[in-house]
Each structure stands twice: as structure tokens, then as C-alpha cells.
Image (tube, rainbow, N blue to C red; front, side, top):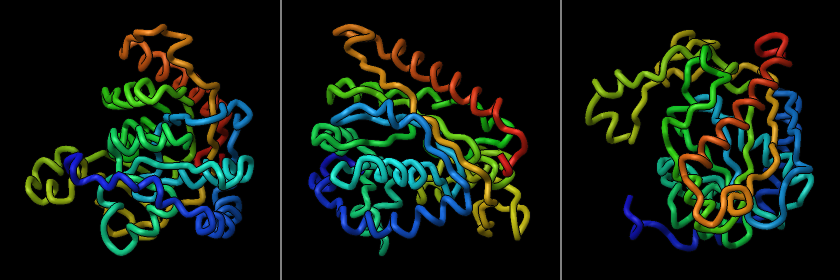
Length: 269
């Protein structure tokens, strides 16, 4: 999708009333099913901020709902949380719902508009590569070399807020990303804009290659918000992108290792 295809008013479609209603029933469900915790919101800076997180949970990632549930509880719905999202979420009958609840097409233009409006923007640099990582790599921070998030924060003049989550990759047993399968499918995978066709094992169907849809296990999910990284203060007026990216991934890996050390049992937490 080219920049000319992007709706410049996407960030204005956020509906705080609808979002509050959705969170009104979603938050209690997530508390009961995933027993979630969001730690470190006291670190959150004022104004626009780019939240950079690892991505977990396969086809049903709970990172954003869990984070947003406690973020809105603390800061209210006058401070929108926007999530940079895959193009497939922006089409079809549910597209309007997603846009009204803060999901926007992942693009430099949308990210910049949302950040400059004072919004909080959540980005998962690893995308599909990260969300379908094997369970054996559940506690590894790996953005597949993607650094665009650093440029987005610099361009908008906002801090990066690193965030890590654990538990989402325990909702199924993720076996492989299936990059080779996607390559073999060729035009079929390209039509769906899919670079991976993951294989997982879960309940109730067992082995799944996206389909059939297994039900996520009620794994305990913990999200940790880390202190903001003020790029200009920490890296100067002309920051090195590689250096900033390396620093962000390093503090995230350290925090994720800490959460993993607390983990007693898979799913149970």
C-alpha cells in the first residue's frame, strides 16, 4: 500500500466512548482468563510516546488489550492508545470497529500524525516474525533487524517507552514460523501478505497451520513498562540508529529475562 492510499484522518476516527464500552467488558474477562498484570505505568511520560514491545500470542495476541486495559484505567480515555497494525485489519466488515478503538495502518505517516497529536502509539517491530516465534524462543527479543521505530520516534520528537510481555507465547505450543511454507505457497502467501505460515499445537484441534483455530490457553500474562528512553538527551542531536536500537533491545532483553526468572510453570505463571 503506497502513501497515497493512506487515509490521513485515521487518527481522528478514535471513539473514546466505544473504546470505554469495549474495555468495560474486555478488562474483567482478561483479568479472569489471563490473570494479567501491567507493571511500571508510573514510568509513563506525558504527551506523545512510542511504546515499543515484543509481540506474543500468534493469531490472538493479547499484548495491546492487556496494556490498554490498565493504561486507560490509570490515564482515562482522553489519551488515546493507537496501535500500528497489519493492512489485513484495516479492510473488511470489522475495519471500522478497529479504527474506532485505536488501530491504525502501520505507516510512517500514521505513526507521525498520531505521535504529534500527543497520542500513545504502540509498535511491534518484530511483527509476524515475532508473534509466531517458536515457544523455545519465547523469551528472546528479536525484531528481525527492523529499526524503523527509532526513526519514527526521532522524527516526531517523542521518547521511546520499551515494554516487554511474557505469557502470550504459552497460549499454544508454537513449533515454527513456517517461513519455508510461506515461500513454497508463493502467490497464495503473497496475496495474504504473509511471510510466515506458522505451525502450532493447541486445544482442541492439535496441530494447526493457522487453521483450524485453536483456543488460546489461559496463560498468565505479565507486561512490564520500562522507563522512557529520551533519545536526544541520551544519544545527542544526531543519534546513531544502530546504537539506539541496540540500547532499546538490550534493556528489553534484561527486563524479559527478569520476568522469565519469576516464572514458575508454563501457563500457570
